[in-house]
Length: 167
Image 1: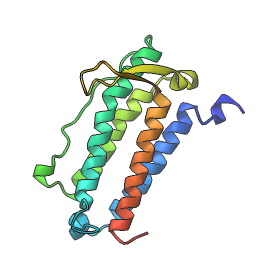
Image 2: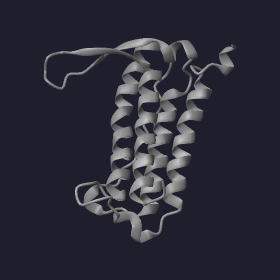
Image 3: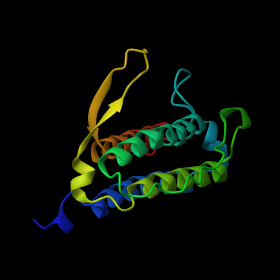
Image 4: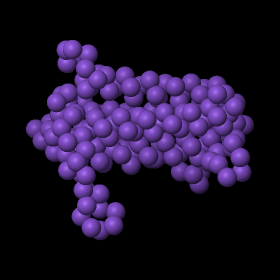
């Protein structure tokens, strides 16, 4: 198998990300504006809350991806931080705002992928996990983090479909 066809190739990872984003946007595009507050039941998240979670989760992931990038590819320049202000749950964003935010956050994630080789994507980096103040860390690759994020998004695509009765 050549590197260009490898699941570790940056193009292959971009395709996975794009496929999942396209599937989520297809669900959003098929929605009526009134469905944004639909819930599966009283204890579950609304469509708006699910989308906000996906958006903010991917934004949260970006500093971790940047830390891995800096470790495995120190010679690569750091992409510009073109962070945008994301919608907040307090503002009750509409479907257009949420769609825009999904695309904006994904662009930031993809900028972090720019320039990385297949070998660099697979190289583990010691990522601090200092939630408890105990200096814990985990060895994880950029590829692993990116695919985990893609699977997380796909889980929420299925959750949206179920909530909207489209699955």
